[in-house]
Length: 307
Ligand SMILES: C[S@@+](CC[C@H](N)C(=O)[O-])C[C@H]1O[C@@H](n2cnc3c(N)ncnc32)[C@H](O)[C@@H]1O
Image (cartoon, rainbow, N blue to C red):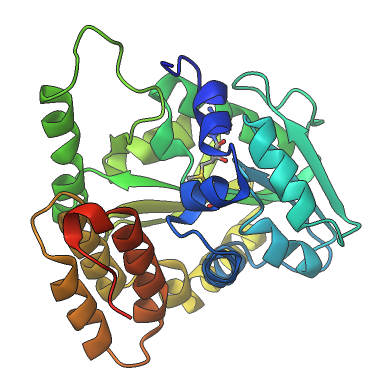
């Protein structure tokens, strides 16, 4: 069946626990999703300086991959998502946490949340799956619900970086082979330049504090209605945490290789050998299970997964 809405698409992606995990981090295992969740949560924590007094919002929370790891470290955590299936699994995975609230979204609006009710908000791997009109509507809503002095951490695919462009180039290739009598996949990967993404953030009312774009992703930290002392504190915090926030060159290189594997340009065994040559680099620990999971899904083409 053709998926006509974001909700239909993501509900179908989350039709089982395994497929929901696969949709959020490409793996098929709870152990792996907890590992990638801890890694991403650390990135968000570093960007937003999340602490025990913070009321935190995640837009597009999926199965709570990140929220499960962050909620124990903040005052309250709210997860919103267009897919009730994703939220149902998130609820199961975060059942032991008593400071957690979920809302299923019906449209590109956070109407269930009050003005200025959130200290810090983030959205990872979500804006890259929606049209720019929805992106901007959500950005405006984030600006409404975040309190003055608060901040957001948002990201999308980076069209202007060579690795981002390399990933984007597959989109027209896939479309050139598709049935063009159908509308394009509603949740297909979409891209911004760093300047474009910053425009949406700025016009929505935020003050950009950092724009990291030396990788496949554009990542922006931005504040709302900052007093001079608040701005200075945010800038100092970001400066001290740059390395923990931005994707590393090795992460970007492995991302590029994984894209080439996915599209048949690089044998998966070559990428696995490269990963194994990296020793105990954190990036290798992130990409190894992802590659093996990808391989198991494509074993009919690539041959059996090495043991
Ligand atoms: C790739 S997953 C990422 C989930 C989570 N942020 C993470 O990093 O694990 C994308 C999530 O965004 C949600 N999503 C996609 N389009 C959306 C929209 N228009 N409004 C709200 N949520 C959306 C999906 O349901 C899905 O849970």
